[in-house]
Image (cartoon, rainbow, N blue to C red; front, top):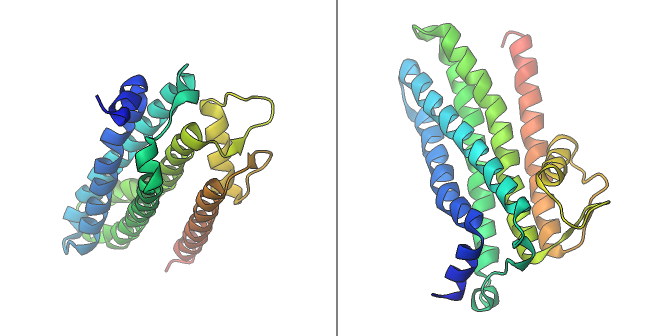
Length: 226
């Protein structure tokens, strides 16, 4: 068995995460695009509904993965194979994952806006508005869940974070760190100690700032009746 295979067998939660994360993220991206390009508002409602279910599934699986990883006795022994580290594969995977997570969340928000604007043209006005509102909320949670997983995977491989009061961070530490950035664009009392992790935090904060600004503008627009 290869070194990579041994690493995954030793830490099955990483295998689960790799198996479900990318396909779900790509599915979310595709469903969001379909919601935007479909001409029928009624069909767009159901397409966005599928997107919502996929987003909820992703969020739940990401939480399960993080809980399993943070409880594992092997977590401090997770190393990406040296031969792959040398050619920067892990770094490239992170870059692609960040782009897909951000785009998937964006598609959910845009799809929700599209459905809300066309809700009056459907036979399920109330349902359309509920699905759209839940999708906007889920898009934000999806963004945080995706980065939560990236922070945990990066930390368990290379470190880069120092949590006050514990040298064995668990589920709540990563949730606290991720949601602090998502809501306030700052890391609170957690120290970021590596360049790679600083890069992730910066991208996360910028995406959340743009997302929250657009969401606020959209909410004001709805209140003004536009």
